Image (cartoon, rainbow, N blue to C red):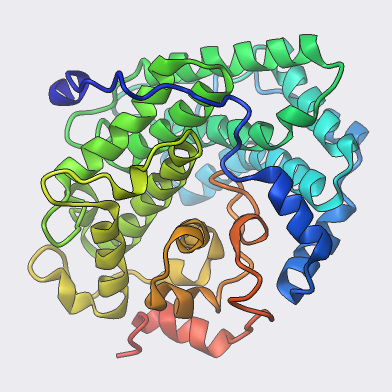
Length: 380
């Protein structure tokens, strides 16, 4: 952490506060003209979004948030996080409905919804202790879910100056409040949870023209590349034993999404190289160990947990990466999980990023997914 704080990132500044994490206008034009069945299905399903009065009835979380740990108490965790996930689905859904329909009703509803939470100063109180950080963990994804969704609609808002000011002030204060907790040394200070905090740092930094937040977001990319092994492994993720593969992928999800926010500010962040290592090494490593756990070597057990392979939310980063680059292994794998949706880290990423030429129809292969979940991609 000390080395990270000494990084000189003064060259990174917010250049375009109205730039979302993708070109919204270009994507609306593409969706209006496309004949791609996957994109048309996503568009058609989202065009009829929720009732705004129903959305506004969801109560803001103003009490001191406390969430049990997932692994010790999965059922209690699921119950406690249900309203948090509902918030994330709501903001991501409204942004998706706006893009799909080009109806400002959904953009205006999103800012009204966020303003309702801002006027209540929601999420500011959450319980944190080094032994009980789960509320802190859970809040981070709510912040970047709100920021990413809001970035899609903000340029379309007319006559909402007071609401915008309140929302942006709230998001900025919430990000700084959350960021002030450094996390535990050797884990949440520097692992996937740091990458998650960095994602809200970048997007809220952009929205509020806060260079301190934006540079905090950028610092995670430097940190990850610095820590990465020559093979592309992220050490704090690979330390997770049977879940090493899952957490390598999980960390990559937030790093790539963060890089997309930074790239939209005009920086060639995808090709940033630290000690000869780039993000492409991390991508190559996750695809290699997904295909063959033997590539983990002595770093982790060969019998890896692979249940996450059935859940498309963990692969939203692949749409973003393939938008810029072409990895044939990703191209083959992502066919079976499209359309991808992540309620907080990017929303409807297939609708936002997929090239209409790469895949025309949804591939439904439940047998293949079940085999992957039990045996990995290699099927061995």
